Length: 227
Image (cartoon, rainbow, N blue to C red):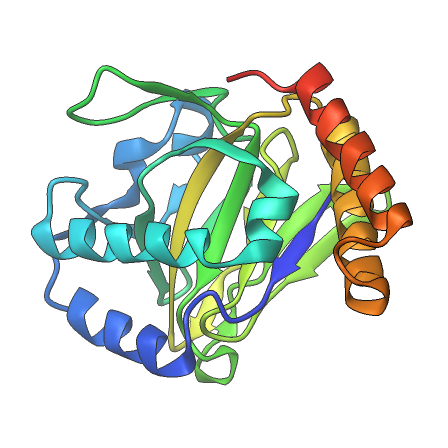
């Protein structure tokens, strides 16, 4: 399931983020790449220890918690601290799949990467190329979003970033370990939750059908959740 979450950051927040990240400690993006992906990864990335990057990483996490669509789609158990990358001058990231397990720097925690996420921070008109191309059962899906918008997709998907031939593409990227490991089960829960929310708007939270469907939703979460 591929989900677009609009306005995780406002346009002003994205602009401020980009401006402050310019002074951060940028390094070769291969630092977090695996053996296979390292051979096709050509970008810059903020060091995980950089105070500027860590401060904005915390702000991304706070924004995610205030984004109901993200929570509904991801059902997050653990979120890898968001990182930041930059593409310019023809830089690209070839076809790859993300590592299944990510250790969290400075903590005795590992995150199973059920979902990958990219939060776009640059205005799409400010650069050419830079599409995130995700392989799905319906074919390759190119994604290039407004500053502040996020795409969430299965980390098991093959994906790539096309060369940035003009301007600079800045984004935050991270992974989520969901309470619901199975992609298809998570998709069913997402569809059910969205239907419940629409019915709630129409009928009210205490309407019998809303109460019944909410009970079904939570019982399915109990059946499938890993915490």
